Length: 70
View 1 (cartoon, rainbow, N blue to C red):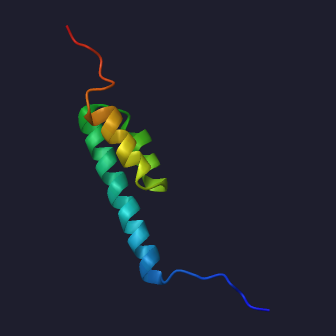
View 2: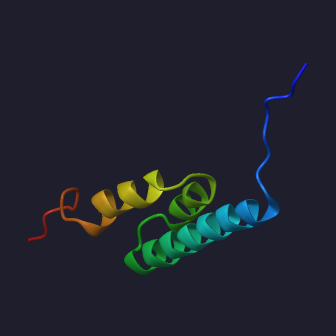
View 3: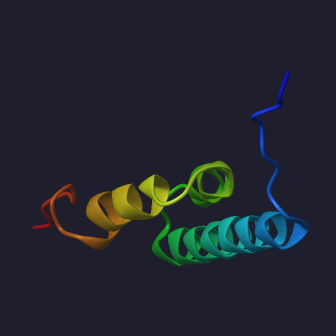
């Protein structure tokens, strides 16, 4: 009987953690600057990659969902 499961090396786990932490920090700081639910974006960015970044870019950074002023 052979075991077909493989494990990631330690450096891969460190790289994944670094990517998620960097994304989460960027989303939190940018959302706080723009007043757009920073804790939501920061926590979501901490558990997934790259969907939160793409959704953030569409919802917050573009003018698609902004309220009309005036």
